[in-house]
Image (cartoon, rainbow, N blue to C red; front, side, top):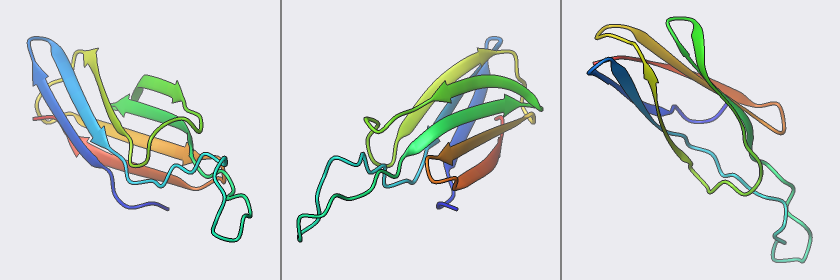
Length: 103
């Protein structure tokens, strides 16, 4: 399991804007270590977000996403005090889920 995500969610004018900073090394599998051996791929493969249990984002990622990725998205609805849950699963099966309260 990775380090906690930093999630900020803010509701205004009928929309909720969510900003997420994920901590993950996002190794693409193309580089080699000092001895010349390939470094195995290790990257986030799937990201989902839910608002009060209803899915509002579903994304499939690949090895081209940068280290410690930043994700920003918005959805219609949401109010102060609602919960937003973000989950990622990487290509090795590791996962992380964190929750934030909409402000």
